[in-house]
Length: 121
Image 1 (tube, rainbow, N blue to C red):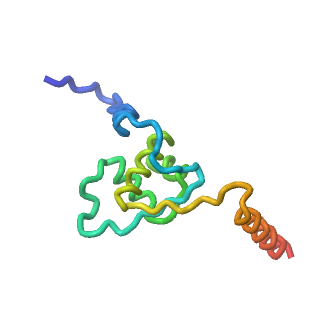
Image 2 (image 1 turned 135 degrees about the horizontal axis):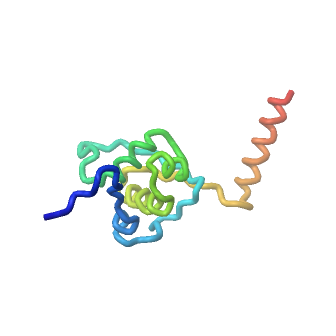
């Protein structure tokens, strides 16, 4: 017989159980990387763990990895591994993050500065 936890006790699952012991995502995911859920297709959300389903639902609009982790209340490392799994299954899109020091990074900062000057008048 499996003992029932006392009322108010947490039924938390260890992080390594959620990621099958993996500690690193198979795809590079920075904290600011944007993730968007894709059309689930005919299978819908079937085959997803409850944690994957919550992550999927949290990014129906583009959100950063950090925002998703906060929304689903899971450690960032776990969320990164699970997002990576969802991306490999074709369930979410991981948007490319502009690397520091790149030409695109400089152009982005210049556009932001130009926009701020326009707002300031």
